[in-house]
Length: 101
Image (cartoon, rainbow, N blue to C red; front, side, top):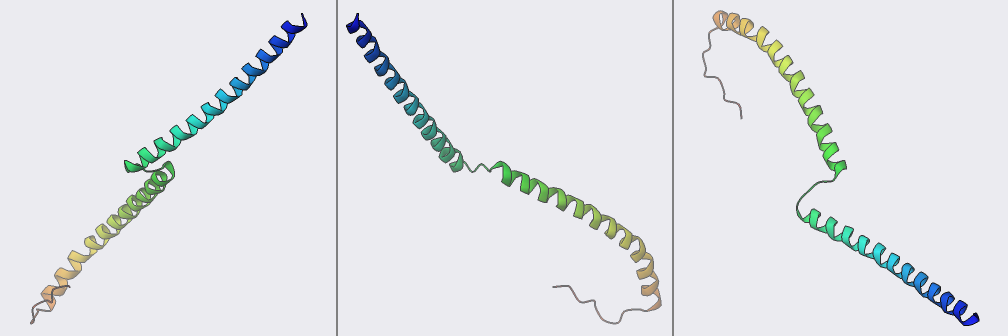
């Protein structure tokens, strides 16, 4: 009876040790797989979520700024044609206009 108890105790220790080893190997495999996946994805020129969100925010701000500038340009163009037409009729040009650089 004593020998059977010892046998099962030894078997239990071996199984527990094997289970711990398998768990450690599993963690190591998962870590290696994740690292390889990151390297592979990094080689494909993907961006991280943080970079994507930052660029998305910058694009939204740029669209807002463009809308404001378009409104400002429309307001200036609405005033400019009438003012420039009156100025061109009152004062004829004698020299050719200079081209902007």
